[in-house]
Image 1 (cartoon, helix red, strand yellow):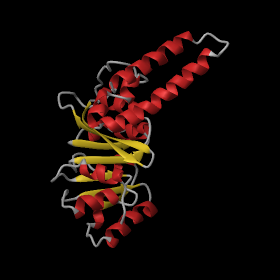
Image 2 (image 1 turned 180 degrees about the vertical axis):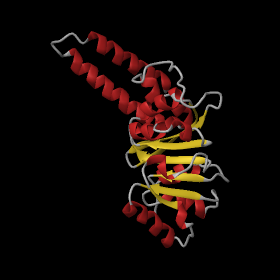
Image 3 (image 1 turned 120 degrees about the vertical axis):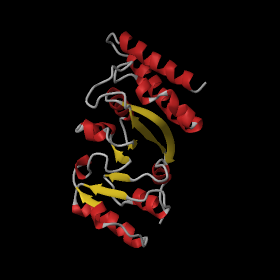
Image 4 (image 1 turned 30 degrees about the vertical axis):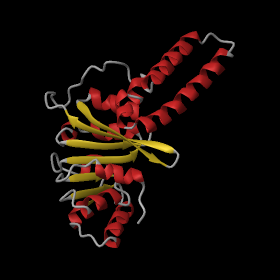
Length: 237
């Protein structure tokens, strides 16, 4: 069975000995690795439909692995697990807004787990903003290549000094580029971060060029984009 570097990186983000729940497990590849490599003593696999969950069960059968039938659960988001039932919650392959919605639907339950391992397909900046304002601290940033893309894995822990349901004041607005491109991603993997940043700075430069050709006054937007580009270029110097 050939798996992507993304799948291995998500599994590697789980600490040895932690129980886990994989929300939206699909083929169950991450739980399979966690059980096969004796990382987790138990992994709950959750997906939205019986058909989706059947793929995970088939993966386990093909790999000759046993799993408690009760650990295959049909349901939406975190509805399938109890507060504190596992150490780590994994949510991978969904958009950042969707992951944030799953976590904030029941803040008390979400903050009952020790760790979150999250892999947003897009809108990672919005997810980081939601994590920060709702009381999670990002403990690790991981970058991993997948084809021509660079995937982000965000690990977070609940701030136990905060009351569940309270909110932190963010240091900058949700649309600020620092949520999407924090300094920590450069420390995670400078080469992969530089690849992502180079693409973004090129996109910003093209947008600035087009705005300058506009017949309308776009000076405010141009200044913002130039500031964003300067920030990104400084990150990889």
